[in-house]
Figure (cartoon, rainbow, N blue to C red):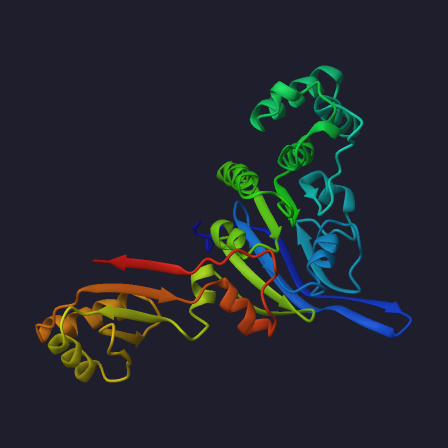
Length: 331
């Protein structure tokens, strides 16, 4: 993950609040959230449906005004200088902005016109993006013939026409097959390597785990946790070290030495509670080595983001999530 402590902030929000009125009364969607996203990093916002993720993106990207709170995007106040913010950002929403009756090239040229690029510059930019997103061979084909992955790549390419340094990706890979999703991940990593800041909302917990430098969990309009993927996983109990033995003598000796363990006498396996950290693993191995106890196999199990999501929100992870149990084996 990228070191974030010394990087300037690309996105800042303090005390962000937003409510809506409907037939049942006033509904608070965001209840005083604070955000700090360093430049050139990936920040992922997770939460159940209706938690306020899309509203957050809409406020930060100038599409909706906050009721109260302080916001700075690339150093600009969206309320006082919306055009300055819009010139610094790009937005790829849940639904594609691609005009399927136009070709890939025509979609990009349309965006170039909206950015007031000249004809020659616009064509150069379109050609660059078609090549970068592996769409050059279909540049003159109508987008209605494209696969879901191709449409999503074109959608993101359109976002990049103006060269934004901050990009909001609101569930960018929903509905894509695993291969197309991983291709999109590679594109996102390439953007970050070039210094672009990514603000990502996603229903795929694996996606946040793989891409994000920091993750915030939003529930009921409030941030209930924030940290690196590893830090969040350590908030949830259930981590353990699984020790396998080849004989009952070592198995029993280890059980007596380690104390608070779960035993499986048929398999000669002990499960020792652990946070999965290097320090706790080293301490465990030192204790076993000091008593000359031989271990046949060792596996470290730590909670995954599914466990974090359930523990923090009280809800099952999204149905589209892909389990990602962190696991290392030593034999």
